[in-house]
Every structure is written in structure tokens, then in C-alpha cells.
Image 1 (cartoon, helix red, strand yellow):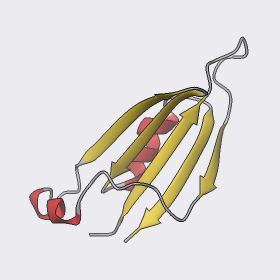
Image 2: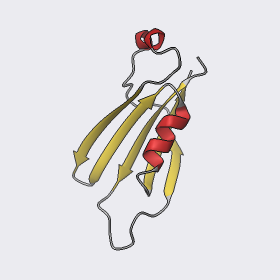
Image 3: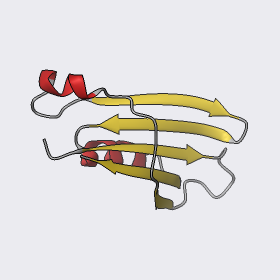
Image 4: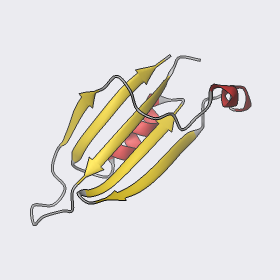
Length: 89
């Protein structure tokens, strides 16, 4: 398996400007949503998990997936905000 990615996307409530740009920030640590024991059940790497949390400053989505491009594309489709990323593997 080539590796996985865990990504956190934070977005404040939208203002009248709409979506905006996504900024990327690499971080040392984010929570894992996929356990290493699950890799054998998904040999093509098709597993993606999301956790959605409403915070005082907006909505936070935590995504974990075996294929980085799948998680990145999903969270980038949400529009502007900050995307924290931790590379694994």
C-alpha cells in the first residue's frame, strides 16, 4: 500500500464572498479514523472515513483515506477554508 492521508478541513460560516481559496498546511498529527487492521479488507484502497464536528467557529471535517487523492478531492470540493494534512505510510 502506498500510504494514506488524514486531512482536516475547517471552514467558518460563509460570508457574502462565497467559497474562497483553500489553504494547505502540513501538520505532525491528526486523529486516525482508519485502523491499520482494516487495510487487508480493502485491497484496492477504497476506504474513506469522515467525521463532521460543529464547533463555535464553524464546521470541521476530518477525513481519513487509503488514497490521498480521494480524500483531498472530497474535501476540496467543499470550497475555501484551511486544509490541514498529515501524510502517513
